[in-house]
Image (cartoon, rainbow, N blue to C red; front, side):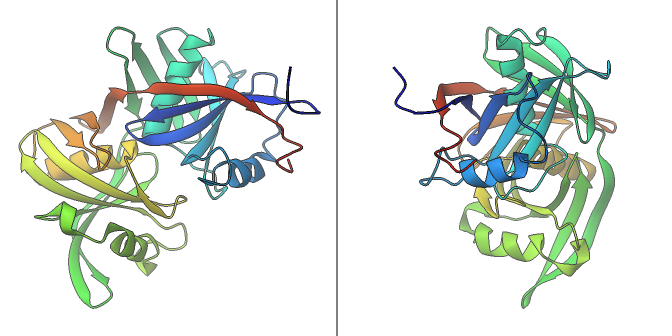
Amino acid sequence: MSIFSGPTQPFYKMQGSGNDFIVIDNRSRSISPDVMPLWAKVLCPHAFSIGADGIIFLEADDSGRAATRWHFFNADGSRAEMCGNGSRCATLLAHRLGMAPAEHLMLTDAGPVSARVFAESGEVEVQLTPARDLTLSFPLQLGDEPWTAHFANTGVPHTVIVTDDVKALDVRGLGAKVRYHERFAPAGTNANFIQVVGPRELLLRTYERGVENETYACGTGAAASVAVAHALGLCEATARVTTSGSEILEITVNGSDIFLRGKATVVYQGEFSPAAMGL
C-alpha cells in the first residue's frame, strides 16, 4: 500500500565514480522539458530531498540518430550539454531497462555519444564528443595569485590547472574564482586541479559549474585533464585518473576522440509524490 495519497513518480538513484544522479524513465514523455529545471532544483538538494549532483530524464530517440536521448540538468536547474559520468549511468540504465543494446548511441545536447556496457566488470565506456578549443599555458589571475591555466571543451568547458600537491588546495575557493572569471564569461567554466603522479596516473579534484562546489568526480573533467596533460607531454595517451572520491576513471585520448571508462551503479530505486514536493 502506498503512503502517498496521489500519483507517484518512479526514479532510480545512480552513481558513477561518486557523481550521483536521479534518473527518470521518461519514455512516456509525461514530464515536459519546460518543467524539468524546476524538478532539478526541487529534487537535487542533498539533505532536503532525494539529493544528487544532477538529474537525467531518459527517453527513446525518435529522430533515428540514436537509441536513446536524454535531458540533463545540474542541481541548480541549469541544462548541461554533456556529463561524462552521467552518460555512463544513463547508458547502464537504458541497457538494463531494455531501451538499448549493450552498445548503442545516446543523443545529448553535445551530440551523439557512443556507449558500451561491459556486463562482467560493471564498467561502462563512452566515447565523448571530440575535444575542441584546446588552449595551453595562458595566465590566469585568481585574486592576488597568478596561475598558469589550460582549457579544453569535452562537451562542456573545462579549465585545467596543474599543481604539485592537489590535496593541499582550497578547491571550493579557487574553483569558484576560476568558474566565474571574466575570461570565461558569460557561460563560465568548470575548474579542474590535477597532479601528475606518473605517465599513466593523475590525481584530480573538480569544482563543477551548476553544482557550484567540489564534486567527488567529473567524467568530462577527467577527460579534459588527460587531454591537456597529454598535450603538455606530462602523461601518455591512456591514463588512470583518481578522483577525490577515490574512484578510478580510465581516459584514452586518440586524436580529437576521447574515451571515458569506469564503473556505474544503480544504488536504489524508489518513488516520490510530485504533489508532496510541490511539482
